[in-house]
Image (cartoon, rainbow, N blue to C red; front, side):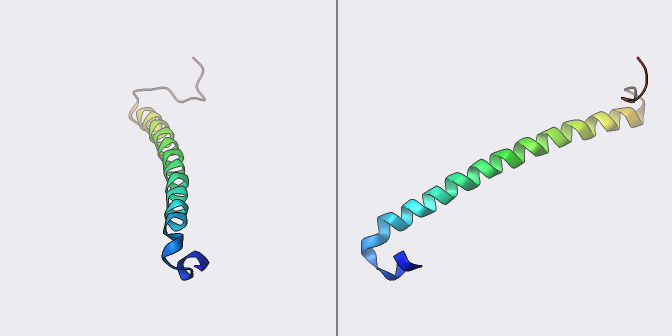
Length: 61
């Protein structure tokens, strides 16, 4: 808020802060998407176990 109160002379600095925040959020989004993909894969494995297409992980081979 301090930069905003300083007026037009801080436009570039305020924009830079927003761009930094965007980069951080995009990285978090990437990590979340990766985690969701892993969860989807694991859930699909359990669905295959439930449907009988795959043995349970605890069963002997």
